[in-house]
Length: 314
Image (cartoon, rainbow, N blue to C red; front, side):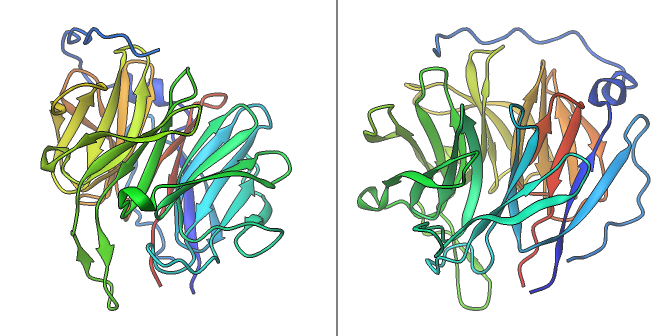
């Protein structure tokens, strides 16, 4: 399998976004929620600076910054996104771009089960990973597996991204897609968001076609809501537990993957036009262009740096 890249971009998101004229901010919603290929030579927007490109991954899907250890974790699918082949792995990468440990956590080794890891989320020293139809937990310092919650009994199809609330509850998107033997994307559905309580009780928090094959999910502490992005449509949603359907708060190029919240800005990656865009008032501002198949983006608040995994199947 050929190498793929992780692109660390935007030394200063604030500066890059400030060059764009703004409209008055929209009111917040009220609630109570406790490869290759080589990167194209497209010029970055004003204020956007590419810091580094790190190669050597095997279909990287998600990246998260552990601010305590000051390390990046990168999930590697290493094969089919839905195969239970137990060969997925998670890398440790230093902020200077050095790969500290390519297979820090590896399926099939040291009692670890890890098939096709996708979304990552941190809660203290615990790294949570979405893995086909299960969610697994690892010690972020030692790499040992400490927990695993199966969602197979509820018919999970394609667990994708994870968000963690202050209470410790996990919310996981199920995009409802599968890949056939030649790589075609099928959508047997259903589209759902699962909830895992701190006591490890699993429930369906949201379900329906209005989710549009949900992919990225992030907690918006300012708006007291979740932001969910659609891979099967062109909508950026706001959603709260108990809502009958998500509310559209912005439209864009579509085929959205990752979402992160930086202050009042929602940053979203899009496969359709190979960009990362910012949404603050509902208007789309393209922050980074020319990034092929940008997956589940992460954010390094210490350096004000956006982290973009470049998805590439073999």
